[in-house]
Length: 346
Length: 163
Image 1: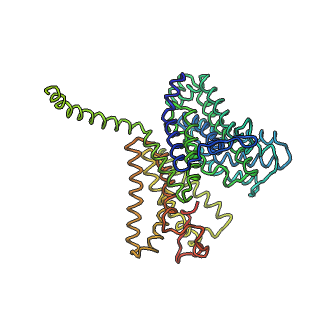
Image 2: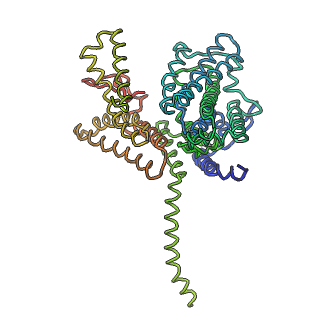
């Protein structure tokens, strides 16, 4: 896809993001201000980039999974498991490198489990990943022994709250992960093969695509992204909370992918659009808090905004609106014709 | 044996097996009281499952049921406290309201060809968020804890409302 085609693909998402940002600025005028404080940029837009990191990371993996006509409900639980494993390793004195490696490996294993259920056993993705979604928090609790495991490792905390070259580390994490995944799937045939599996599994298998390995891979990428998100969340609060780390984030990630315009029925996908979708969701979340609404309105406002965005992006709505417009134009032309005759007569 | 019924038989077998395992640990689980409690405590789950079956049969999914359960509980409680209506009238009201809520979601899914997962996800946020934003609902922090913990008479498991 060339630059112009890519821009046209993500134009609705960019417009929506701009509209949300303008809306938030109307309620909270100092929203767009960014200043340099100490070692990093500070301000609400930077905050959106940082706080949106877990959902953005999950959305990268989720986009690939949804492109294969699957869904991964377990990412929130995987975040909790990986955060717990890393915190366990750090508090055990094994060092940061081992902790991160263990957490990433755990994410890959969780993804492998999901992929095994879907690709080898042929269980529906929504049911297969539901298993780990329910069981995962129990596993995380086993690792943390039911406590909130806190640690004071400066390196680990840097992952969640540090800054590099002026930007928070979590923001770097999702931007780099997005670029890397985008390059891998778009500069090789991998993205095309993923789309083909999502459009028609049987046909692509007959055409020689190794769909089993491909499905295993996308679920493992999803698990890996969830592991990074779990590390960030654990590092941010310097503790692993098995019950609340990543709670309901799988829903936000799926929402980001849907706002990004990727069909839940598989096929064509855009990681960039999903990432913009994640930023839209985080802008709504941050905006509601900044605008000073009573917190009990948060969910209602979020629901209404999400419904509005999805309604505006619905292809069927475009067709309906186009039909109404053309009918009105025809009526206008019919009404305008006699007038022009009159003008000609004068 | 009809092979298409196999999943049903497997489900029944798993249920019996699980019950047997429980019985080995806790023999009293076979008492009528425990069996009755199991039926009572999971009534909301069974009722929701009936509706969910129809939704999944038609190729969709409804994520909003849990929030709608919570919504109807709060709605009934607030109406009974504030309006003085007969409970049956309130029940009819809440049934009409939640059915209309489902119909609105269905209209969006069908009319605008939006994915059921996402529409009912937004519905879940809406139903979960709306009771707390009613002006006449006391916010949880100001409610005396004694009122929250006081149980209504009769068995009334409120587990559907909690997560």
